Image (cartoon, rainbow, N blue to C red; front, side):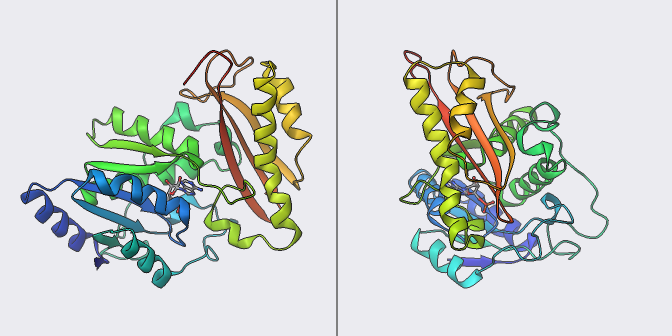
Length: 288
Ligand code: AMP
C-alpha cells in the first residue's frame, strides 16, 4: 500500500493505473475510520483493480463555529485499517492553502446542486455544507481518476447530491451507495461518536430508536408523515432537534403521506454533538 500526500503524486499513480488498463475504485473519507468506512472498502474491493482511500478533513464543509479544529484524527490507525481492507493507495492531501494540495492559494470554485441542497434537511442549519462536500468530491474525483466510488447511506443527502453532480457533469463514475453500519444498540457509526460520553452515548441511541419506531408504525398501517414523525418524537432523548422529516428518496422534498418508498431523516444535538441518521420507509406492498 502506498501513501501519497500531494495532488501530483496521486495524479501520477492514477495515470499509471489507467495506462495499465486498471479499474480504480475510490472511497473518500475524513478519517478516524470505523466499520462504516470499512464496509465501503469491502463493497468496492472485489469490483476494482486498484482501491484508493482518501483521508482529508475538508475545511470547506465546516462553518467557523463547527468542529474542524477538533475533528478526531488518527492517521496511523487509519493506515492500518486501509491496509487490512486491501487498499492500494491512501491519499492524504495537505491542508488548504498548500500549493501541492486540493485547494492551492487562490482557489475559488464551488460546486452547488441547488434543488437538493438549499433549505433541505441538513442544509437548513449548515447552509454551505453541501457546497463544500460537492466541491471536495469533485476535486478528489478529478485527481484520483476513479471509475467507481462508494458513499454511505448514512449521509443520505450527500449521496443524493453526489449522484446528481456526477450525472449532470457526465463524469462517468459509477456511484455505489452502502447501507448504514450501526453499533449493536442501533446507533449509526460515526467518527463523531467519539465525542459522546456517559449518558449522552445512551441518549444518542434514541435517534435510531425513533426511526425504527416510525418503520414499525408504517408496518402497522400509519402512512401520514406527521403522525409518523410524532411516533419518532416520543422516543427522542435529545437536547435539540434540528430536523425530523419524511422526504422523497430522490428529490428530498417533504412527503405528506408515505405511498411509495420514502426516507425518514433526522439530525439532532446530543450534548454538543450533532448526530444524523435515516431509514427507508417502504409502505406495505410497495417493495423496494
Ligand atoms: P466521513 O469520514 O464521515 O466523511 O464518511 C466517509 C464515508 O463513509 C461517507 O460516504 C459516509 O457516508 C460513509 N459512512 C460514514 N459512517 C457510515 C456508516 N455508519 N455506515 C455506512 N457508511 C458510513
